[in-house]
Image 1 (cartoon, rainbow, N blue to C red):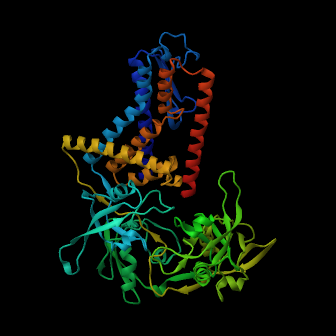
Image 2 (cartoon, helix red, strand yellow):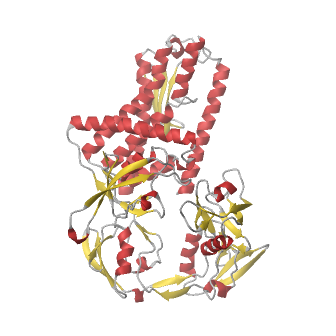
Length: 615
């Protein structure tokens, strides 16, 4: 029922944004005496339509837009001879009509920003859950558990404030960050002032200092149904209160407390469906799987101005070969770089996935090894991880492990399991299938080795768990309730401030994209909007409403860009018409509008595709 309710909320919010925007065009057109032939909410063929006066109203099935059809937008257009045609109105009136949709969205954003704190909002806590190694925050001795109190004298209420305060300034800007840190022995928390300079990494959308928000102690989901956490009886929604009698406040504390617990059984106090209960977990009764094979190495980050960036290495590249090492592991690649030493060269054979119409390909690059910054170890300037997606190439084959016993070799591509009946889509799916099929008996796996396909008989090895961990369980960001604003004047002031603040943030982000200081891949489309909306809906209506206020501001900025066929493009052409003394010919204007429409649709498709890949 909650899922249905959240989806209904999202549909209503989308409809409201569109309705308010089109209503702006509609009302101003009527005010200036322009004939409105059609007013539609949604796209596609009409589901319901009716006529009142000289306007046809309709509801349409695809909730991604709407339109107002005005008579005679151009002297050569259909309906141009109508005395109520749009083109017959002065330029300033037509400009107001086209800008009214954006203005209404701005008014809606203000209303939502006023309403949200009155209802009650929740936001990501301004508490540090993790600090990136060798980041500005790490160098300034900012630690997990620190609460950010203020930045440059401005109070911080949420982690979003941290991102906005730092991310909208140029990389290298210094900030005075006041953190609150708990003292040992139950003493009062101490406040410390840290000077931190931001940095811009290629994988991040904007400059940051290298901190991540704290995670709540609620299990959001079990990523592996056969993990020790699942075997121990933990479930999604469980709140972990204590571990071995010690209270748990943040997700990053869980592993620390589990490691500090004495060997053997450990007791977790959890809250499940509103009731507290103790869960005694004996690692000796749990099993973990030994697979004996690993996925290939992938480039997760490329440092700016590093040898890897200069050589053309990109985030997402797979390393198929390094020097003479076929499908090197993370450790092997690091060791190869270390042995090469500063000034030497490392040749990488990379697999680069295609994008849209560009096919997958392999390339060779040569990186010079160097010492980067204050790092004493020689590097090429990349951070690495595991490539979990297809194709399922085998990297490491553990000596004496089940994969080696089955005859796996480096570079083998796993095609299917149990004689072509199951085709895993990625490594996570492969592991799940192997746990189901190969835990109790051997299964036949079809692999491709060079130009040959062959079947290998494979069975997972089970072994006892030495120490319980929460591997296979995932948490989510910790949210806190913000103070409610019940005074109307205070709420209105807050709404105006938030509207102006978010206008500044969105335009700043746009400027960063233009200057190349932000990554296009940081942009989100409709799929991301729905995903974030769904997650925030569970945090209460105020949080949901505030997010849609932000989206309304984003729509204002996007729609007023001076590009056809956006509202800003209409206003731009009207300004040019005022200077020229006459409009552009209908054929020329229609061509420009068609090209612009195709580009907008292409952007929509690209963002949607990117959202799906990110998901």
